[in-house]
Length: 404
Image 1: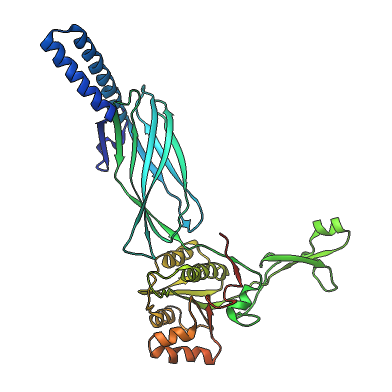
Image 2 (image 1 turned 30 degrees about the horizontal axis):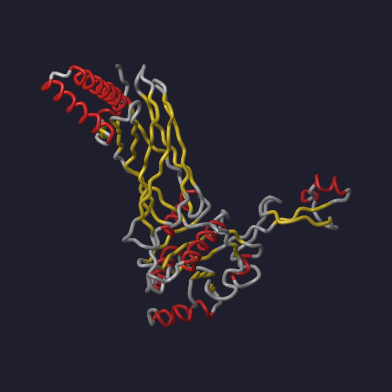
């Protein structure tokens, strides 16, 4: 048998042929029949022993060929979000030029290291079945995983095994190479007018406001044509259907200079964590929306066990940096809110607005925090540059929708 399996010499692969329970019974019965026939001179027992040993040899030869012919790998997505299913793809390759492999099962161990409980890990098994792989062919299977917590998913080891054809021996190939995938916070659906809520005033902008065309902002409705409207705003298809001119309306693009700070406060390890996770998801959603403008300057900071901060912009890499930071925030009873303010100020300089998303009120944070916190917050409160959103208060979450 000629093989083209480049993974044979890989240190990450482990190949085994192991007897099943039925195979052990076969071995015991064949040994008993062989000894009994030899000692008593019963030819019938020797014939039975020969049949059983022959079945074991056929199974071993097939299992050995399957072990030497198989290689496997997984394909992970580039990103994953809490509550959103993502696909986990398996690829199993048969490197034999003549052997057909049947009834294979692929198992992958998935370990979740949630940021909520950094010392604990939950393990699950993701499985898929492949009915047949032809010679020199690749079979692909897809399973779906819905992560329930943000943090890090660790995949591995990856196993494929088969007991075809007689279920006497199991051919097993193990790929011990592990991979990780960060699970980002859940992104929420923002309601119309959310900008006015988070800024606490009608415009919520800093700097100039520019529009270069009707597609600069977000479309939100149609209205009848008025004198003075430009022709380029007319929605021609709807105007033709209604037999009167109709104008498309777009939300004006804005330039933001803002620091979004999330306070990862959890009263005790046994307390419900819905509010703090909602605050982290809200911070991620706002950062993704505000950073969409090319001229916006957004800093995202997290006050958890360790303060962290990063810049957010319209590029894909910086957005992933923000989501990665928020996925790694560890909740605590005493978040370092002052340290998060300092890191954000050092990173971004002066800001027109500070937005704090928290599962508790500002008064509770001041009473339980650093004595210097009150004076620092007063600096921004006096000039109206601080907006504190308490998600546990009535109306604190009216500006977004939570979908189950």
